[in-house]
Picture 1 (cartoon, rainbow, N blue to C red):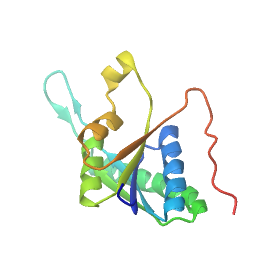
Picture 2 (picture 1 turned 180 degrees about the vertical axis):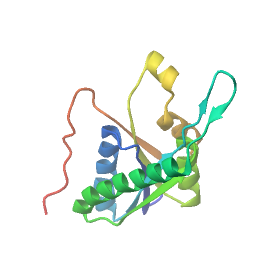
Picture 3 (picture 1 turned 45 degrees about the vertical axis):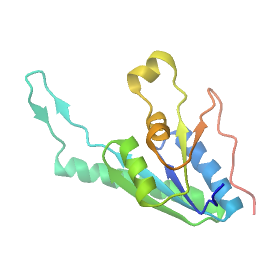
Picture 4 (picture 1 turned 90 degrees about the vertical axis):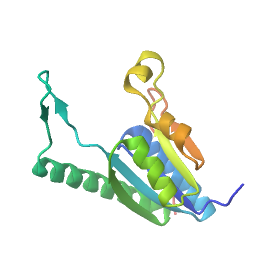
Length: 159
């Protein structure tokens, strides 16, 4: 297996994404790898019954980006306990496409991401970003499933 030096960790700020981040940081610490936390977002557009559309204003877009940056900084602060090199990035566009593109362009050795573990109708209705990434990414992808009804038990190492 190829050595792992760069790990991409997509986040939607959910508990499942936090669990995946912790697993990636633990792995990065063990391997001496660096981690990039990536948040991909798509601007909401609303199509009305008459065919017209409501677009996001520049102010709303700026607010969305600012909120994402703030939440990434919070996750970055949490990640510092692992004493691993961590950077953050954001991308605008469909999440799965942006994750795969970032993995390829950044020449990452591994993508570690959370999955909500939806099944049946919910999965069919909502789709799965993780599933799309696994199917389309040329890089290895490790998915971390969020335990149902359980709290996260993985904590940063005590130094």
